[in-house]
Image (spheres, rainbow, N blue to C red):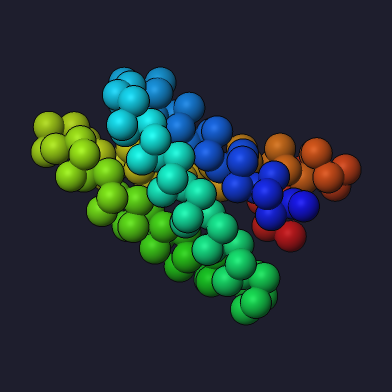
Length: 113
């Protein structure tokens, strides 16, 4: 069940971040939700299979940033600073989402378990 909570939190936090940063088009929001569902589920399934060493979490998070950026760039165009926003959205999701997920599961706050 925490897999679905993690995915939902990621989708909400990252989409919320982009909305606050002015990415408000309906098509972008749908794209953001879909990209985050795909990258979050893939990342967490891989971590479930391979373990959770910090280096792997960092590597997979950076891969997620790259994949999401590659999906968003054609929709947004070159005018916005999309890469820093994609990185920041993922950091918000990793840190705040990790804390919220642990609190919802009744565990003490912390990013990595």
